[in-house]
Image 1 (tube, helix red, strand yellow):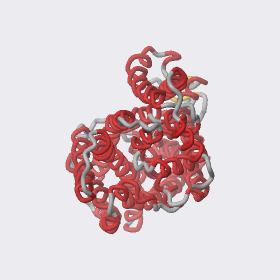
Image 2: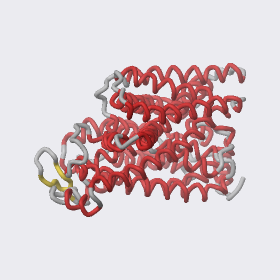
Image 3: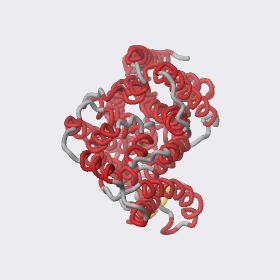
Length: 509
């Protein structure tokens, strides 16, 4: 390990110690399972906003988005960013306040709980199906985060992938298991700041190294379609490919995923005062727009750096920020420490999502399957032990799924995002805004949305042509149709359900 790497490691180690300290600090706040999974609904507006977006913006913000822009140009990365920005704003505007009020009325602490409580599902059918959906999509999602950490530290410090991955996983598991939701939310808030610093530093250093904005434009416009929003650059052929209307709509559909993300929806449920969500919405929306725009530009700038020779050629486009950070760190001790902060930002982006996913998956097993469905009642102490044990078991499974160092981070995230967006998104929207929705409609939407993701991705999409679109869009539409049709064909909701629905519409509880 050379001197540069040592100083970079010092920055990362300092950051990890802070994270572990937060986990220990908040361990004393977890007196009940509700505290462990929802923080007792004590989050302030700023922490709510930034922890929600940090848990959303996983390693694809600092690795996936720049990698796509670096490889194929502006089109796909830009339209993805636009879709995500629009989805973020609409989710905060429409869903956040109503879900916060409604979940407090029903006294729900998890998303599966809310589904059953909202529709008075005494048999907890919605709870068990929703819990199964969470397990199916969150365990591999968490595994992708562990894999990202393994690749990052394995490459940076020349450590064997599996060792780097396991050590990273242990850190995440420790502070999440000990500190619960409040620890995860607080560290996510800090991680959002570290991610922001990383993006800004890489952006500025990249522009300087590439010779300025004009030089970047000159170097990239030589490639057909690279800077276009209606064409994409195809590296293998060196030609421009069409990025037409269907592809644009398909890419924008990423924004639909927000309505069904359990780890984001839980932040809405946890804020201390629903009236403060307006502040959270503004902070979250501004941060997402700026961070995504900078991430796209970094990918393009990175290509400009390779083109002018300031950055050596590398094989994996998703490591463009890592490569720029290594170059920055070669300029002395101070810059090596700064480079360490940047790499900690990449680690932070992964940790902030993995901790939230672990909590959501753990709650699905311990609260929704063991507690609600099988109706096994335990003391508070026993419930806390089960909650933490479940989290550890799920983490171990995720480690095994991440064992292959060649696993695709972006591909897994894309599929899991679609799965939650189609399974939960339509149900959340109809549950909050259409009082005629009943349990059978919600169940049909959840099942049809989840199944459609697999059918479209593995059977329909390979046909190509007009069918080659992101599976979230058609699956979301199918789920919406299922909810409406089945709800209208079955018995209307009871008077009690309608009264609760009307109560949730009020500005304050």
